[in-house]
Amino acid sequence: PLFSALIGVGAPDGFLSLLEADGSGFVYSTFLGGWEFDEVRAFLGGDPKPPNFVIHQAGAVIGVCLGLGWNPRADGEPCEVWVGRKGDQPKWGIKLAETRGPLPVYVRRTEGGKWFYNGLYEVTSHTTDPNVIRPRLLPPKIVAIDRLVFLKRCAV
Image 1 (tube, one colour):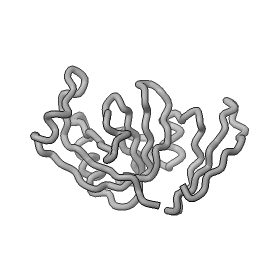
Image 2 (cartoon, one colour):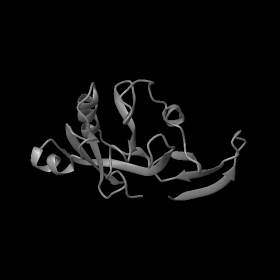
Image 3 (cartoon, one colour):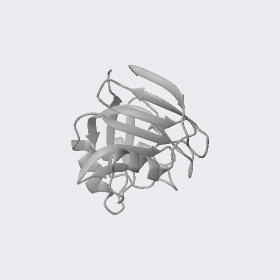
Image 4 (tube, one colour):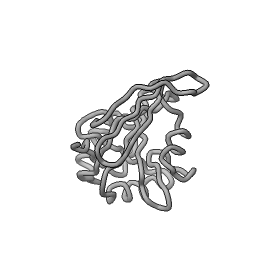
């Protein structure tokens, strides 16, 4: 980040907050103890509607939340979003793939755990090629992937 400061906040849980500015006009305050999903969505101004892998507002993707249980390569370079086939997930996978510009990415390392800000990323490509998707299937948990969306960390 271009700017980073550790400050105390008056949060009831007593967590410290890390303020970061990354040069793109975004300033983030991230509790070092992590965030609940609803806090991330409220912080970004997202609509309270599924699917939860994308934070969206008025039909546009404004952030991404990736649990490592469903997106095991979310911490990789490139960051991979494994879009499922249930409900509206494929529709939002297309919207994510078409999104241009920086997106804040939050990662949850354990099921039911807190979300942590990973940085600003941008979409670089996507695929629905079964030959690329098939090796990523991890039965019995991950048995269907509609598309993969690849993100790279934004240069600051």
